[in-house]
Every structure is written in C-alpha cells, then in structure tokens.
Image (cartoon, rainbow, N blue to C red):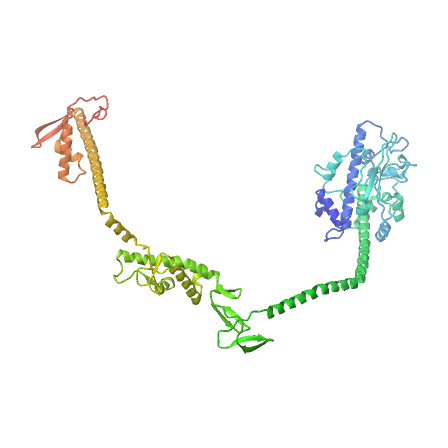
Amino acid sequence: MTVAELREFLRRNDIPVAKVPSSRKGKPPVKADFLAYALVLRAEYDAALKRSAEKARRASDSPNIFQSSASPTPVKSSTRDRKSTEKLSVVKEIKPEESEFSRRRLSLVQTPEPSKSGLKAGTPDTNRRKSVGWVSADLFESSPAPKSINKVPQTTSLFQRGNIFAEELKDEPVDMEISPSGTAQEIGNATQEIAQEDEDAMEISVAESSGGDRADDDKMGLDYNDMTLITLKNLLKSENIEIPKRAKKAELIALLRASDMSHMAQEESEKSGLDIAQTLNRNRREKAAKAPIFRMYKRFWMSAILVPCIAVCIALALWLVTSRTLYCSSGEFQQNVSAGFLIEGDGSGCVPCPKNAVCSHGILTCDDGYVQMSGRCVEHRDTTMAAAWIRPKLEKLIKKRWGLKVCGYLNANDDGGMSKNELEECLFGSGSDDDTQRVRVPEWIEKFSESKKKLVFDRAFEALQSNSRVEKIGFHRVRALDPSKPFSCTVIGFLRVFWVEVIGCIGVLIFTLSIAVYVQRRRSLEAMLEQSTREILDILYSQRVESLESNATPPFVIDTHLRDQVFSGIRNVSQRAAFWEQVESRLQLDSRVLRSGPRMIYGVPSFVWEWVASTTPSKKYSPHSSGYNSEH
C-alpha cells in the first residue's frame, strides 16, 4: 500500500495526519511511520474486541476456560495480579526479518535473572508475569509459547465515544472472525484470527499475514516476552520512543514491535526504491533502443507532410504574382509588363484605371472614402452612412429658410433658397449670418479627413437634389416646397385666419371669469357679515351677564364702540361704515337685542345696543347655544 492509500485510509476514518508520529525528529512521517501507526491502531482495536468478548462470556455464567485447577496460584496476590487473571489474553506476534537494527538491539538486551521473591518451587515462570497479562502455557496445548496482550498507550483512548474503532466494535458480532482491511503485501499489517469456541477451551492467536510464531523472535534473538520491564524500557529509550507513565509490559512490547515493523517497512521501501530505479533504467534502455526506429519514421512522415505543403505555398505565391491585374497610369506613358521588365507600350497589356482611383506602376489606389472591390473603387460603408445621416439635416435647413421667407422675416429680394456653399458652412463651418444655426455633427463624422468630408457632403447634396419636395434654383441652389415656420409665425398666421373665433372665445372666457369672481366675493362677504353678527351678539350677551353679576357694569354697549371692536381689522373708514350698516340691518331683525338712544354718555349723546332677552345664571348661555340664526 502506498503513502497516498494510507493517507486515504486515515482520512476515511477521520484521523488527522498530524497525529501520526514520525521516527525522524523535525521531519514529516514516511511510509513506515504510517504503517506502524496503522498497526498500533489495529492492535488496540483487537485487544478491546477480545476484552468485550470476554466480558460478554463471563456474563453468560459459562465456565472460565482460562482457570485451571492444576495451575498453582500464589497465596498472596496483588490487586494487579487479580485483574490480570480476569482479562482475556490476545496474542500478537510480529515476525521481523533479521536486520542490522535488530542485531544492534540484541547488544542492549541483558537476560534478567528472575526474582525469587514471591515464587515457589515448581511454579512456572509465567506465574510471575500474570500482572502483565501472561497466561499459563498448559491452557493452550497447541501453543508452544505463552502469549501476551499487546496494549499501546494512547493520549486519547481510541475506544471513547465517537471513535471509529469504538463504533466498529459496537456494531460487530462477538464470535465473527475479524480480518484487517487491506492485504499483507500492501500494508504489511499483522492479521489476527479468532478461533471458534469449543466446549473445553478457546484458542486465540494473532499472527502476521505471512504467518509465523514464537520461533521468528527466537531466530532474530529478540524475545520481548522473556524480557523484564527495565530491559524493555531501555530498548525504547535507545529507539528514542516516548514511554507512557505507568505503562504495562504488554504496552511496551506493542511499542517495540511497532518500531520493528516500521524499520522493516523502511528497509522494504528502500529495496523497492532500488527495484524501481532498476526498472526505470531498463525501460530507458529499451526506449533508447527503439528511438532510432521511431526517429526514422518521424522524419519520414514529417517529410511526407511538409514537402507538399511547401510546394503548394510556392505555387500559390507564383500564381498570385503572375495573375495580378495591371492598371494603366493616367499619364502620357503606359506601362506594360513583359518577362518581368517595365517597357513602354500602347496600353494593350493593362486595364484602364477606374474612377475615384489613382493608378501608378500598375497598382490601383482608391481615393479617400472609397475601398477597392472587384477591380473598382466603391464608396466605403462609413461614407454611405454619413451621407444618409446628413441628407435629412440639409432638408430641414432649407425648409426652415423657406419658412422664414413665407413669414416675411427675410428681405424681399431673397428667394428663400440656399446654395451648396451655405449648406456646407452650416454643416461643417461656424454658422451662417441669418437665423439658421450650425448643425451638430457626430464625432465619428468629425474625425473624417477634409477630402472625405467633401465627398460625404457631395453625396448628401446629390441625394437632396433628387428629392421631389426640393426645388432646384440654378446649378448649386435649392429651395424647399414645404416651409418649416417658426412658432411665432405659426401663431400669427393662425390669428390672421381665425381672428373672429379667437375674439369670441376670449370674450366668453372673460365673462365666465367675471361671474365666478363675483360669486366668490359675494360668498366671502356673506360669510364675513354672518361672523360679525355672531360676534356682536356674543359681546352684548356677555355685557348683560356681567351687569347682572356686578352693578358697576352697564348692560349696554355704545354702537360706535361695538363697530370699532368688530371691524378693527378694516382700515378703510368708508368700507367699515358700509359693513356696519349691513350688520345693523341684520341686528334690527333680531328681537333679543335692542338699539336705544340717544343717551348722554360722558356728556355725548350716543345710541346703545343691549341684550334684552332672558338669561339663565345657572347654565352657560350664549346666542349660539340658543339656536340663533341671522336670517331668522
């Protein structure tokens, strides 16, 4: 399996690549590191799977196949020993080939002397290793050597909630055979086999995909199962592998075997690199042997393709040169081409020069505003479009000039027409002396050269002369038949024709407006008089009520004082007197008030107004609340 496939495996299981440890400090992990990390993950997964199966089996009250009455057990055992005897042992053996790093490791291994404390005579050596997961050899008749549990410490347990191996363990049956993903040739992963459960015992073996057993470790001289914890830690330190705190012997063994697999994979990758290099060299030599033949065929086909193409190009160039049309010059001498030399002749070998063109040395050059097409010069598209845009502008100018003549704004000697020069001045000049203004020409026409502008104007003037609504006056003068009159001239002409109707309409309009103004003023006057009358009644009523409450207040109001109080906003004395007369006529019709006099007030005889109707002291009373109507 390649590094890319290993990366895809980690990505598919949501494992970041940064978690893969590297055997080279400060450098990214290589294929061997990925392979070792995958083996470690698989070992912990299988160990957890076996522990789960053992727990399920103990819950079913079935006899424990790992308990043997013949196996001696120490009288005093530690808590760690009791826990180890309850665990299911899963065997994991890795068969590395003998290499240089394994021989170096043998130099660091010292065979420890077994401690005699806690051992009895006749007790197997495996009894002292129960604390790290050892199982007595007599329980497995087919197994030549004791097996151990491989546990690899992890900073974060792989079997917590949400981990990929935990989900897989939860969904997988207990008694189903588990096979690691991938083949042994691709990833070199160790496969584990779970044997079927018998009535008497269960045999569990985890072996490398290539097969093997304890004899492979003996062949290398590295039997991690017979080493002590101190020796295992020394080996890990020599490999610069970090040792977890409180790590068990099985965990240290798993780390060492993973390191062995990493070294083996690295050696295999180096060997495969050499094989690839040899294969590439062999392929290169084969290609080099075939290259002359390929180059020969390549040169043949290139020659077969290029030679006809070059021949066709040469023939086409010769045909274009020999078949070129020769145009006669407009001078005294004409040129003829014979055998590649220019000679003097009568022009029988050349084509006459077309209109709107200049011919020299047999070459045709069209004038500005023309383009060559089929041996002649035709007007360019821009020239035609510009002439079509200018023609209606010229027609509008001559119509406006004739309208001024009809309205009488021009001299009597003026015929109302415009010459060609006058039209050109209005179009491309600064303007004329009369009322006509210069036509605003678009920018794309302004960019034309003077000769091209002249050509455009000539074409537009010719089109204008061909119009049936335009009259020709001489050779270069035109006049419109339909005048375009100014607005003032149009109004005057209308009034001259329809003056009676216009005067009648104006009279009717004035009469209607007068009636409307009179009605509006009359309504305003009536409203003002009505408001003034009500105000006077309120004043008289209030004066009467105050006189009843206080004897010092007279019950009447002098008429002149009343007038000045109500009409104080009117400055005109005569207008104020006219309004007061109309108000007095309204008050005299009201029986609730009375005008009396003259009375001597402050030595002056005066007429007075007073409220003579009854009042109600217990209730607010006013002329408005009593339903007073001035028209009553």
